[in-house]
Amino acid sequence: MGYNRTNMLKRASLIPALVLLVAAFSCGGEKGTAEFDAASAYGFVKMQVEFGPRVPGTPAHAACAEWFVKTLRQWTPDVLVQDFRAKAFDGRPLDGKNIIASFNKDAKDRILLCAHWDSRPFADHDPDPANHFKPVLGANDGASGAGVLLEVARCLSLRKPAVGVDILLLDLEDFGEHRNWRGSAADSWALGSQHWARNPHRPGYTARFGILLDMVGAFGAVFPMEGTSMHFAPAVVKKVWAAARGLGLSKYFVDKESDPLIDDHLYINQLARIPTVDIIDYDGVRGGFPESWHTVGDTLDKIDRDALAAVGRTVLAVVYQEK
Image 1 (cartoon, rainbow, N blue to C red):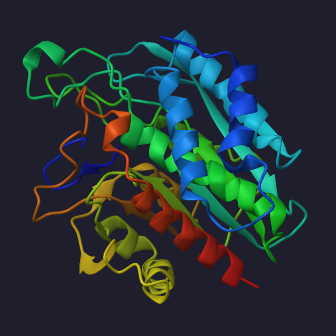
Image 2: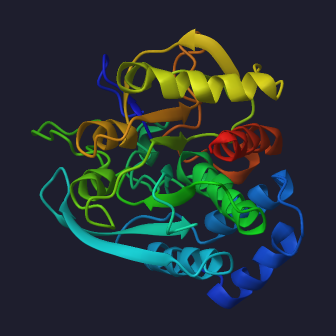
């Protein structure tokens, strides 16, 4: 998701869960290495997309949530679902599910890794107005970040980190107001992170820092030092970008600051007081978000395994360097 705070722009066919669970093992889950596997991450993106648009209130959304829980429980028993109720920009009630998987759960010092897993109900930035009320498949905007974190979870199950790690898959991030909405819709985006930040899965929960992944899988992806991250968590930005630089990934993690964006990390910073940064594809020179953003073109063919690997390897490097 993500949208520009300056310009105020926000940026099925079901496969049975058992089949998908078996497929998870065939795309990297059975491997005995804790190295990030790009093919495995891509497989996790693909499996989400095969559910169809993961729009809250649909069968695809419910089935995908069940699959996430079953898949994560392959790697840790500490998986829970935070059910919550929220209100959409137009007043309709929405039921959401935040999914949390914990590793090394008894460690006091923790790191929070986040991504949203829902997809946009409206392709309201599609070049064809006829598509503006069609749902978005969300291969990049939603599935890419969640797919990377599933592969990170597999790696963490094989190589225990020195600190605790919580993977937080956030719901209802992308149900913000339609671009043609003329009503009042303050804070209508990132509803899952707003709920979690006010009601963490453990009372009094805190973490050293957090990393949010959003739209991390497109060809030509560029991850700037995003402005909201620089405001709330400059030291964490420095840590993450230094890790990427050490891995030779400066092609992706560029040394320039972008406009501030409203995304899930804003509320985790403001409400939960956890310094959290956003790894998000946003290129001011290119014109902002990827061309597929909030269009019916956000499909699997837009996903680049190398971009997924760049992000996943960086996240793991940051996690494992913490003592």
